[in-house]
Image 1: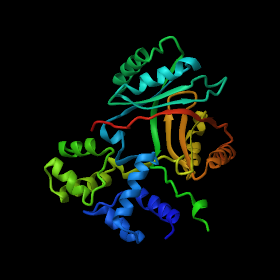
Image 2 (image 1 turned 120 degrees about the vertical axis):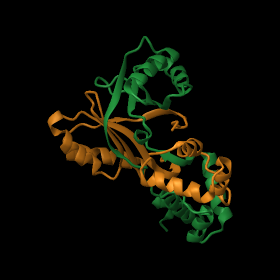
Image 3 (image 1 turned 120 degrees about the horizontal axis):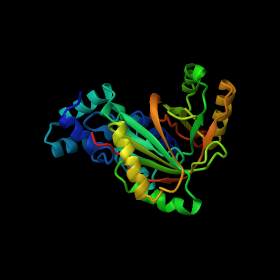
Image 4 (image 1 turned 90 degrees about the vertical axis):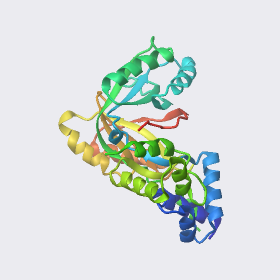
Length: 166
Length: 148
């Protein structure tokens, strides 16, 4: 198997989950017809270069009792957004943080973070704490609590097929 | 539904799963469990949907794909209908109703970067609504770790 075909096949296979068997990498290697070392080395490389950002258990927040999930957004001056983003990431209850393009006039916000909490009151307190910690008190803010979750799947990333097409 | 041992396993395994020959045995030893029990507990948590997956979280863009956050302003009376349409797109990875004028927020994950725009156009055509695409300019890396 050519290297890029091997990579595509490994991405697909791993995407289904790590086999829950005593020697999961050997099992994957057997399916792909390569050695176990090759499989483990490739995963290690992907962890190093960021192709795999995390490797292990992906939890469902709701089922763990994180009932309240808020997307908190601020309209932050461009020159202040970097420092604010850095400050937000230091907070333990902030789970994601992004700078995004505004969609004026409807959407003036450019700094986004996600807070997952056990309940709404706790999250509102955390929003205040985040606003202070990141020095965002002067800027327009909005809090978008989730009402319902319709879909949460691991994105079914398929291997980049154009590389495999030969 | 889950006990303290499950919680300890979740807290330890949201990243950093070992790349050793027998990773479950390694986890088992650290938690004073048998390998069989670790595997059985993880399997049960997947079956009970406490865990959505046990495996890699890929960076879609590094895999050559596209990823975007987008929002819709859905009229109240059309909410169920539009939910069904949006959820029907394979490119939609997550979809949440949120309390805001923009009341539907979803993540698009596509095989190619161009796929994002194509999916947005198809969703606009199918729903008759404007899709607010919110492309990211910067992502701050965080481990998504929730204490169980």
